Amino acid sequence: MQTAAFFKDLFGLEGQTAVVIGGTGELCGCMAQGLAHAGAEVVLVGRIREKAERLLSSIEEFGGKGYFLPADVTSRDSLQELVDQVVERSGRVDILINGAGINAPTPFLDIQEEEFQRIIDTNLTAVFRTCQVFGKYFIEQGVPASIINLGSMSGLVPLSRVFTYSASKAAVHNLSKNLAREWAEYSIRVNTLVPGFFPAEQNRKVLDESRVLDILRQTPMSRFGSPDDLIGATLLLASNKAGGFITGTELVVDGGFNAMKI
Image 1 (cartoon, rainbow, N blue to C red):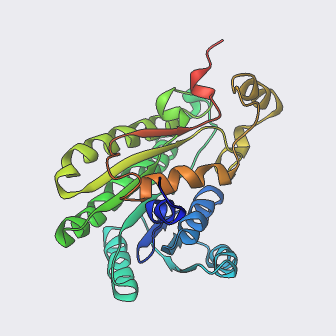
Image 2 (image 1 turned 60 degrees about the vertical axis):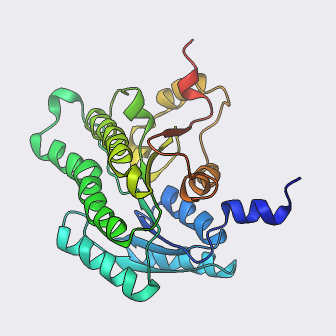
Image 3 (image 1 turned 180 degrees about the vertical axis):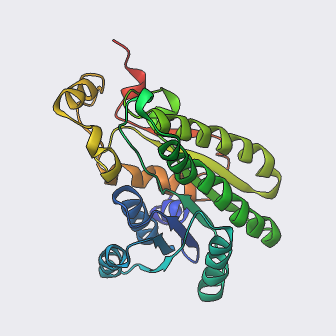
């Protein structure tokens, strides 16, 4: 019979460092809190220091630890500097979460190339670039690591009103599977965490009353996701003990949306 200590150790992240890109947002911020409460030191990477400071205060109230670092995910030099700063301050990186993302509800025929490229650059190219920079570090260190890329239900099933976002997230899903195959020999696990419908900042603009009703009709649990719903999945994918044989998967957290057809 397993003891409570066994399960605490199974999902515990004591002594590990997690870099959470997009960590000042609602969903990744909650994921960062979960990682911190499991014992990891969390590095919140984003653009708005004030948001990070509020989240860090909450983390510290529960005995967790972490800090904020700004970085430009469109710049390879900035990302390399991020790795260097974290290693200098924390001594290591074990977990990377790629959660930055933007959206737009523009009808397909009205999408300008500038908007299309901006969304692709943020949602896909930045993930590609970040995985290259951090992946090189992980391989050189020769220790197990976990990369969690934030996907989307629209990456599995194309959704109306978010054409470019859907395309970018589908590519992230594919990129993650390819990296899982390439880096398994180095004990680097790469997975996609796939939220269903969560009232995050980037999708509120497309959630009018009729769309909300449509979503709830197709969600067996009859509700939107709460950021807390992502914590358990995050810890499973982050932990090399609990999730050590999980790589290349799309872990869906959607209240049954993707299982419902009629």
